[in-house]
Image (cartoon, rainbow, N blue to C red):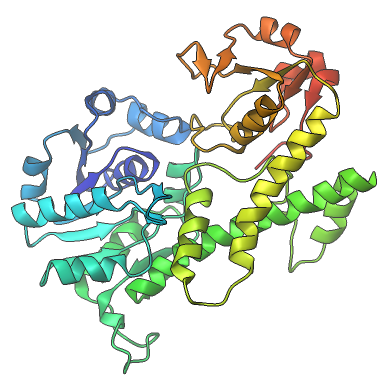
Length: 401
């Protein structure tokens, strides 16, 4: 099978490595540096399993910036390009997906296009209407930053949004998937190390599954953060409350560690996109999750200010261990709130190569950083700060999530 994956980010690279174990995979990206690193057996993103597989496994994988040549002989083209949320349009910016789809079909109209980028509900139908006769399906991903390949190898479920299920006269659960949808679901299932359930749905249902799944996670983050806020204000033990609540098996003791708020690639933009998709549909919870995240950052900043710091040190912009991504990390919102109150803010982030970040000085030496900061803000506890534990402000209870 000839497979092309477009986009060498978390989703694209992890899927390319996964499928290159059994198929010929060409990874297409516009960044020559990323292409060169992959071809040299090195990962351009922070993910331990991807780094290991590229360095040690036998993979039929080649990266290139020559998209047209790659598309020519492809059976499947997996589109995993960025779809950032555009606050002006109040929708995802799907330009990259649209461009790739047009280019693929101009070169190879017989290819099956699989969209893995996160998109608004209804987008795949729009692409099919724009390109009559083309085979375009949507298959959402559910990957964690820093553990993307692990989650590809051990998926919780494989979902393919297939146009065959969109006849309202049919029972969706009984409609037979089309051969391309079946083939792609089989590709992903065969590459998995576990035996994940496979669900073939209507396309808009698959698009909605992605947005609702991530919004539920955002709601869960917001819930335990608000529980923690209550405990702080009332002088209660957050850990005891969470433990008691989590003993109910319907709630569980997972994904419950307080933080500064949700951030990263997916949750901020996916919750906003889902809210935009509601439009005239009644809702309260979706908007509340977004507002709760802002409220949490306001509270955390105010709680730090109660210590009357002159200089606050931000220890790491990344929010998860094993990840090198800090885009829209919640701690950046804390920084901005502190600076607005006139507090000097310094940053320790080894992945930064600049002298400043958001007009805050980047301190490269950890010992100097510890010495200069009156309060050190860390989303998660770390042995690096054990010697200055009295300075550390964190809401981390379990050392995970």
